[in-house]
Amino acid sequence: MSMCSVNRPLQPGDPAPNIVLDAISREGKIALNDFRGRSPLLIGLFRGLHCPFCRRHVAAMAQLNPALREKGVECLAVVNT
Image 1: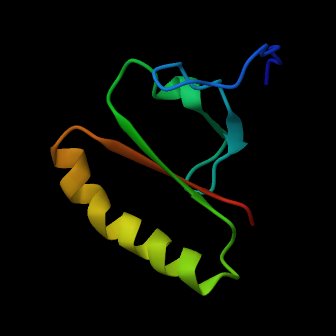
Image 2 (image 1 turned 30 degrees about the vertical axis):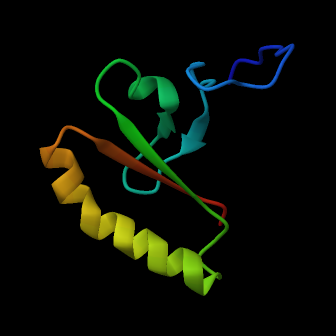
Image 3 (image 1 turned 180 degrees about the horizontal axis):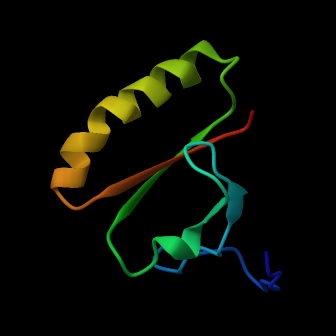
């Protein structure tokens, strides 16, 4: 992952920095840049699967994924586990 210096906090409309994480649904890594310019992206940030609220929201996001994909929105869940 490349490091960049930010002189100010991100503002609405600023592009998100590229984040590279290990993939669990396939081999390799997933980077935010993999989605950039393709379609809108819904990112869910979850504390961990130990959290009952997070587990519930991960499941809800998985159920919404087909409907969102039909509308051209991709989903990415990031779980701190």
